[in-house]
Image 1 (cartoon, rainbow, N blue to C red):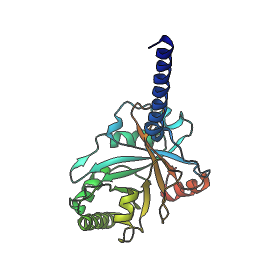
Image 2: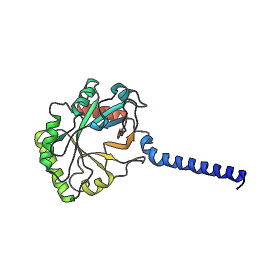
Image 3: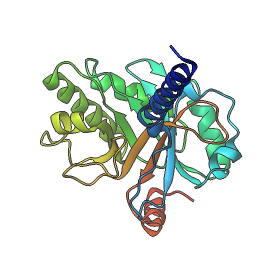
Image 4: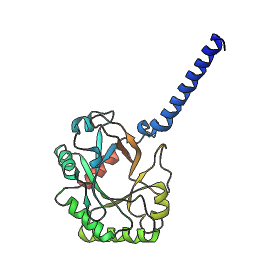
Length: 244
């Protein structure tokens, strides 16, 4: 093989490698940096759990990025006995800064809805949660059992408080478990990635558009969300929820 042929082969290899790197960036990185394009998504927020740890620069996170963080959802509990170890610390930091926040429970579909609701209420006891209480339902094996336990959770919460309840779920679970099963009257926080807007028949209140976000003030990847409405709509909703 001549030197010219070797040189051409090296150029071809470099070109192929460059193309592969670009494709990897588009396939893997897009979910980290993809932002909704619709003009009236004016209000951005995040959700946090113990996964993000205790080394958060709160002022940088909330105010130092391209858009200010207007709302936060915090994991409070999971199943019948697990409570998030960072929930109260996060809630304290957000309360000091008058940031409107909600709390969510990671729902285990096979476990008692009543016992899970009690765990959630115990986890948030003494914390002034303004945004809706959220049931995070993503996985299940027995559809009918999941629906029964969800209804039991909701019934227990409604017996204890008049606080709004919201479902967090993905598109497939929304269609299979929520809509048409006497659960679609609840507020909805939908997870749908790499799209300009979720494609669902009902109205959603919040949309989680990425689970691989990168923001100043925090080293771990973070979930990114928007409020479905204008800034004026958000201010009205904040007032309704009792946020300052």
